[in-house]
Length: 71
Image 1 (tube, rainbow, N blue to C red):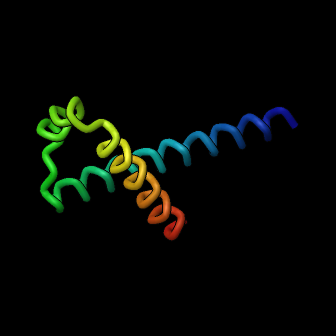
Image 2 (image 1 turned 90 degrees about the vertical axis):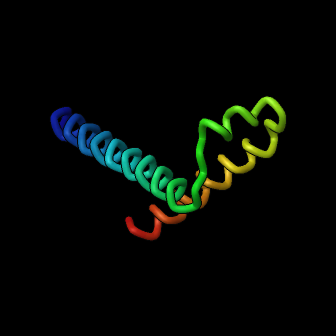
């Protein structure tokens, strides 16, 4: 029984790594397609932290919705 649980954990961790890689790739691809340069954006964080926080939050929600539609 313990071997089964250990294999289940390993498989779930593997799926989590695949999903994180996919999220990172989709985020990078979407940023390139809309032309965002994050070096410039992070320099603006000091001026308006709330706007960039909202952007990152909604981006994470959108990517999660995309991933849930595939899996």
